[in-house]
Amino acid sequence: MTADIVLYKTDIVPVGIDQAPHLEFARETVRSFNYRFNTQVLIEPQVKHTEVLKVVGIDGKDKMSKSLNNHIELASTAEETTKRVREMVTDPARQRRTDPGNPDVCNVFTMHKIFSPQEEVDMINVECRRAGIGCVDCKLRFASNLNKHLEPFRAKRAELEAKPGYVQDILDDGGKRAQAIAQKTMMEVREAMKLP
Ligand code: SF4
Image (cartoon, rainbow, N blue to C red; front, side, top):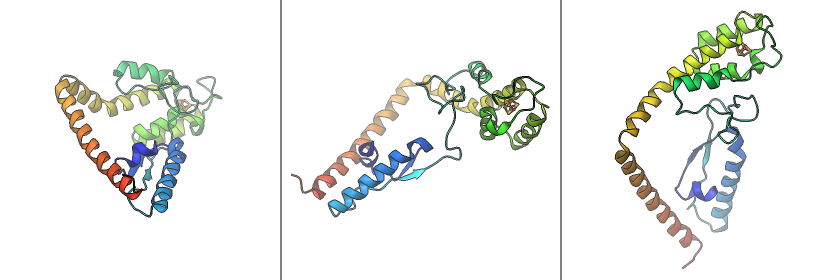
C-alpha cells in the first residue's frame, strides 16, 4: 500500500478512520527511507479525513462494506436504495412505534446527519425521543434525501455509460500520466539508493 501511495508522489490521502493506522505506517516507512538514504525523494502523505469518520453498515455492525453485504450500492436505482434503507437496523431498544427511541445509538439518525437538511435532523432528534416519529417514516425521509443527493451522480453515470469510448480514453490518459510519474519516482529512488 505504501508503494501504491508514494510511487505517484501522493501528498494527501483521503481515508476513513480504519485506514488511518495503515497510512501512519506508510508515513513512517517514508521517513525511514528518506532518513536512511539521506534524501527527500519520497513524499510523506498526509491523512485527509471526511467529516464522518466511519459509516456503519445497514445491519448496524462494523463498517459499511460491499464484502459484508451491508452496504447501499451507489449505482442502485432510487427504488433499490429505498428498499435497502428500509432494512436498516435502528435503535435496538425501540421495539414498538409507541416506544421512545434514542437517535444517539441509531445508524439511521447518523446517516440523516450526513444527508438530510438540518431542520429535519433537529426535528427527528426531538420527535424520536418522544415517539413522535416512527422508524418507518424516519427511514423513508432518509431514503428520499439520500436519493435526492445521489440523483446527479446517477445521471452522470448514465451519461458516461452511453459513451464507453470516452471513458476508456480518460482511463488510458490517466494511466499514461500515472506511469510517467511512477517511472520518474523509481529513477529518483534508484539514484538515492545508488543502484545501477
Ligand atoms: S425514529 Fe429514526 S432516529 Fe429514531 S430510532 Fe427510529 S430510525 Fe432511529
